[in-house]
Every structure is written in structure tokens, then in C-alpha cells.
Amino acid sequence: MSPNKACPVILSSIPGTHILLFRHPIAGVQLVKGTIEKGETPVETALRELSEESGITDASVVSDMGCWDAEHLDQIWSFQLCFTQATLPEQWTHLTLDDHGHFFSFFWAPLDNLPYADCHPVFRRALMFLTARLTARGFVLAHEQSRNM
Image (cartoon, rainbow, N blue to C red):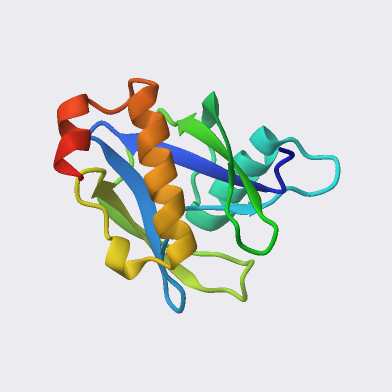
């Protein structure tokens, strides 16, 4: 599977496992994601998209979490687990210059209580895949995952 999209993933140190999501003003709750440009690696794309869409500029990739077939518009997503030494607020808004200049509202969502109802079906499936992958790799405690079912 060769990815054409990259998705940076950031987990919070808030007790319980929380993932960074944002509310798009038109399209609902999403993960940061973007197109892998010609000559870019998934890691480079993930960090570029994270900067463009959230304003986080000092992140690094700590783990390749694998690829996922979105079964939507021929998209294959590459998930990149990222880390930043910056202390990120509980929530913030960032004006993105791509996507026609929308304000994206960022927040931390607990993996055991994700806002699936507010997500497009593709993002629902992506979050389910990602939660399973994070759990399998030990980034989520088993008792948190069982509360999510």
C-alpha cells in the first residue's frame, strides 16, 4: 500500500489517553491530514500539515503507525505519531491558509469517549483504526480500550 495522505497524530499527557482533534467549521470533527506532495515523504507531509493546520511547528515524528485504506476517493493514509516538547493548551483556534482560510478549533478528545457522532464516516473509521493500532502498540492501556466498546 503506497500512501497518498499523511496524518500526524499527537497524544496528550492528560490522564487517560487523549488525541488531538479539531472541529472544521463546515466538515465536522477531524484529524489533521493532508496530501503527500511529489517528492515528500509521509513524515515530511505529516509535519508540514501539522504546522499548516494547527500552528504546531516544533513537532517530530516518533513512530510510523502504518497505513490505512480509507475506502474513500482512493485515499491511503499514513499515520505518523508525533511529539512536541511544547505545552499545548486544552484548546485553541488556528487560522489555516489552505482550505480557503478557515479557523480550525483544536481540542483533546479522550480515546475512550471519541466524538464519533460529530465526524464524517471516514474520520470515524480512521479513529477506530487508529485506536486499535495505538492499543496494539501499547500507547493506550487495555482498560481504556475496553471502556470504548
